[in-house]
Image (cartoon, rainbow, N blue to C red; front, side, top):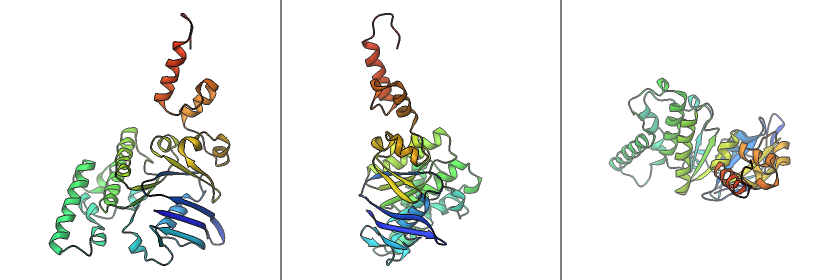
Length: 280
């Protein structure tokens, strides 16, 4: 779905991405991790042609982003900004969700079919996010505005979904609701690339992790493998999620524990072999 081949890019002579190579397969769910200023947002803007590589190539579904129009690439890729207020631009939730559909519902639709498909997708998004299409987006909470922005992106049914810190500023309930929708989309075949500073979210939902540090890709592998590599995380100024960190503190008996469920199961195993009256 996405291929970076020795890609470099910089601003005013200062490198932001330096010789990055990786391949994202169709249906992957990758978390993009790294310290502030590592180049994560720049990398994501290279994915859809908003930025063009200074050297190397970016291929989106086999199309070179340097030679294919950004408007053409936009039919395959959806981009959710970290701040929804930079993405929302319409007077109602319904208009916001409909915005952009004319760009993807082109050839193959008669005018009547296009309007019918737009209405169908609008109702689908309103139902999925439990939104009122008549509301003013800017009268909603931060979490609700993020959901409206995401609904507008998903209405276009992108093959690749790029998420720039999708859970920033959300409470636990809002975070879980958005991530479950994204996870469901991934299970139906969409490819996800998600920037996240929330290591718990990255660990819970991502299956693969890419680590950027000072513009270079320093880690790429299964989430469990990356989250368990303390030296790699430390070099990128990252802390592991709480459960793997706690497991490490508890010693070799808890090696490999990654989730709350695994921690509870391991505790029960250890408790079962203790002598009566003993403690864990």
